[in-house]
Image (spheres, rainbow, N blue to C red):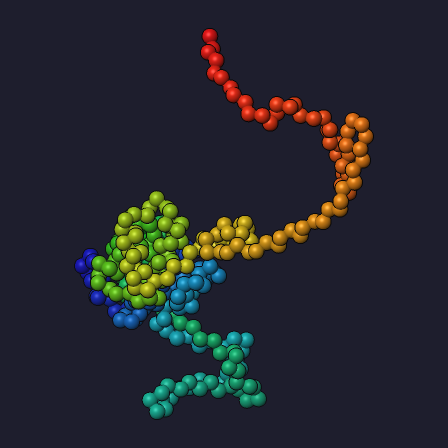
Length: 312
């Protein structure tokens, strides 16, 4: 298989996008970006060994991530129903449709619809794409017998260490995020992304780079971000928004000053003046001030001329 991402995809019939244990937001965003773009032309599945938490709900297609590895075989299980209560099981083809019939023993009710559980097992992927991670412990599934013989492709911001018995193709490169690497590989392969894919990859880059402040952000990062936004990708920053109640009025751009209630003028009653020979008291309410009656000097208000003097 030629070592280029486009040829890897073109020569694969079925693909499995494999997330590591406890994946980061960036790794899930990159995985969903790959899954959404590959599923239109290939039989593609995305798997995570860890459950998806609330933080991933912003990503488009997160409900497509399964914790059941493989989709090769359909398994039908009857929950809380004794196998000994079944007389026999038969099947037939009716109008080109398969029909399975479960016949219980006499005087025993058949399994209810609520007791029927459907699952899948067995992996039919011939190419497994693993995202991020540092070593084989982050991807325990690649050691299972179902994936023996599958081509392993790694995408990340640093190379991965796998056991010597496993061969793999690495498309890892220094970047701000796994989402940036995935977007770059898509661009190099002339694979067009739609708005949903662009939004996932854009959010992955934004979160992994701490809102583009990380030292790993480069000119190539902003070039990819520009193309994702042109494709309709929407930014959903994790940075907390400024709350107007935490700042004084008018401090946040775009907000208007609210009219403040004006203080009502106070009516001051006519002061009462008591005079004696030396001083005058003016009483306003409970406050009493003494006003000095001493006359200012006669030349206080007359113009004065000052002459400069030399300083020895």
